[in-house]
Structure formats: structure tokens, C-alpha cells
Amino acid sequence: MVTTESIDVRVAERHLLTHPFYQAWTAGTLPREALVDYVRQYYAFESRLPGLLRSLAARVDGEAAEALRANAWDEEHGAHPELWLRFGEALGLERGQIVSALPNATTQALVDTYVEAAERAPALGGVAAIYAYESQLPAVAQAKIAGLEAHYGFGARRDGLAFFEVHRSIDVHHAAAERRILESAIGDESASVATQWAERALEAWWNFLSGVYPAGEGVTLMSRTASLN
Image (cartoon, helix red, strand yellow):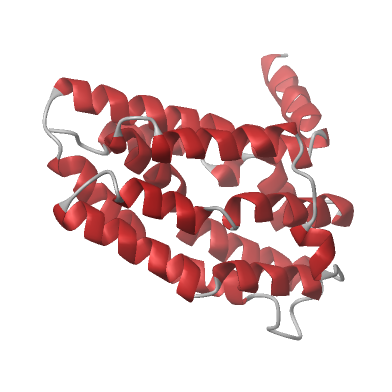
């Protein structure tokens, strides 16, 4: 049986909130241009997510397929790409600047990782890749809201925050459904596949954030060097 314990350990080790990008966001030291670039780059993934979930649902059956289709429905009919565009507008971007943004190398690698996970990898690997991300989103969304309100001019108004307000609650349910799918699988080989794809997804997300905030990698290196001296 696949337990999510090994995956959860790896998520904790590479949790998005430990990346310098998010640490700077919550501290209010993230340059506005990095935040704006993040908005443009993330849309490449967000706009693809409903289709990726549908592709993955088509490769499983029963309750697993039903749960993944429900997730895709939430992403699409909950207008999550639309809510993301509204967040960008609240930061002063025009929609065309977001929709037409060209993905950088790490953004493209992130999208490619999830396309492979959803369409070509063993289906359980695809579920693990989604779980590795969505299991983090409630905490990440809450931290984003707090940072935006405290440091980026969202304190006196709520417009632009709907994307994060939705995800801090809905992904509790999505992640729980994905956990049940993973834990219903049987066999050591299944566990290995799930863990492998969770690790690949976590690495892709870490690199994605470094792509929009490369200065943060220097901060991390300096901090590690100081701790050794």
C-alpha cells in the first residue's frame, strides 16, 4: 500500500514556503518586479491545469476518475484562471501582458513535467505530482494573503485576493482526495513511482520559483555559507 508519509516528508523538505521567493514575499522584501514576473509566468501553469487534470482522470477509473474530474471542474468552472488575471490587474498588469507572456526556461520545464506526469507517466505518478503541489496550497495561499495585505497594498481592499481565498479552502479537499487515491494503490512498485514523481514535481516547482526570483538563490547560498562558519 502506498502511504503518503514518504511524500509528505519530501514536501516538508522542499515546501514552497521555505523557498527564498516566498520568504521574501511574506517579509515584504520581494521586489515588485519579481512579483509581477511571477504573475505572468504562473499563468502558463494555471491555464493548463484543468486540461491536465482531465487527461489524468481519463487514465484512471472509479472514484479516482470522479475525484480528478471534480478537481478539473472546480479549476475550470470556478474560473481560477480568471481570478488569477484579476490578481494581475490588481498589481497593475493588463490581461494581455499575462496571457501572452512567454514562459521562461524553468516555467516551461514545470509545465513539461506536469504534461508528462498527466499524460505519459504511470497514472499514480501523475496523482502524486498533483498531490505534492496541492497539499501545500492552503498554507501557501494563507501566507500570500497575509503578505499582500501587510506589504503590497492589499490591506485596504479585497480585490485581487479571490484566487488565494478560494485555494486556501478548496485544496484541502482536493489534496485529501488525492491522498485517498495514493493510499488505495497496492505494491512497492506503486510506492516507488509515486515518490519519484512527487520528487520531480517538487524540484520543478523549486526551480520555477528560482526562475522568477534568481536573486533568492544567492541569499540561500549566503545563509548556508554563514551557517557553516
